[in-house]
Image (cartoon, rainbow, N blue to C red; front, side, top):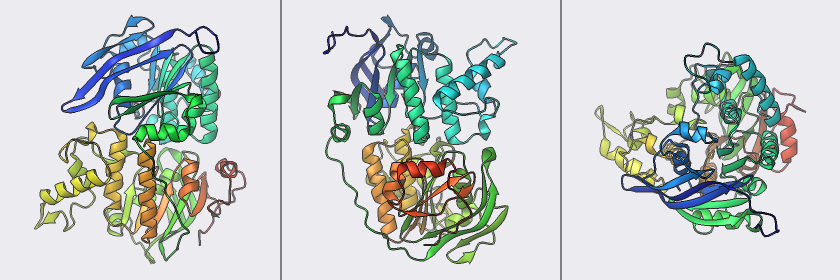
Length: 516
């Protein structure tokens, strides 16, 4: 019986003594947990704590070295995703598992019908997808090609793909990382309805506020082991955070800015990005010693602006001015040569090369410099020492600088990218979603390093869909909607709801010059 006297719900999932080793690394160490019908269990832990590994074992992507899994009272065949799907387990992965050259509807129906079937049933699938999209606030055109979608839209497809299969147990691995606050609220509202009807959910998130609003119980992993379990209503946010990191969290203090010279400027720039996103006569100034925060709903031009700054997107009109001089040509090499440090939005597609080593990745943007090159030959000793320094300074969990990057967790990849960008002594930092998928301790560390860079006189552009992050770090805040920028506001001038209104396009008059 439950404490309130109601019958205890049926246990639908049980993981017993799950252990997984990768060489000398023990990713999961004898972990035991259970999930009841109609229950939401949040899985918390630092990056590299073993959360995603544990869920990949549950879903059949990995095979445990020890332990067993039961779903609805029956043993679950190890290492078999089809067995997990057949048992009613669905998973929304943290990193995308979509076929870029296929449409949304084709991706969602893929695997639900035999390969020799002449009819994919796309008409009925479109209707179901549109209904789910409306229920969850996850708007996406079923006939759009995946390669044309923004990161946020691709995440929506991942969520829809799992919901389409009507799973009885749903694993959500950072499902709201790219959703707006309104979309997140809509998702949670629908989840609560599904849970009331008997759906069970394992919810992996680094956002403690979300965990407290949606989860019944919290299970915390630390260093691959079970660190503790709490009833959500009986635990404070600080208690959960300290349980995750094994101690007290640092508190970042950000003082008033000391804006200096304009180091990077866009003058009436227009450009067309991937998936139809565009910039429409955008003017912006980034000053040294100041963090400019850029908020907006995914797909409204933020990715195009980041690509333009990084040199991977060409301006159709307008002017790019760096250190007071108009750039005659602008490319990734020109951006690096002019002191731009880049933290890209998608660490897999544009941030790291998975089959290259840690050392190769961290010098990839500076391998031609005298720091790593002697007489035309790479100085691998210097590269290894640089990589070791980043591994230590940023607490990257990896075996050595020679390890393949694809073996690292997403959070540890992000720490490498951060170290590569900040330790290159940039004058300008383009930080696009810099803390996406990071745990609370890592987020605090990233924020501290960005504040330190600002205080050294670096100009920082922070692009984030986390409004708490934007409001906490930004000295000035601008909002992008359909390729246009709002007038800037100072920290604290606008509430979350007022920023949300601007994100929806209300009160935005566009075409502003971001002078200090």
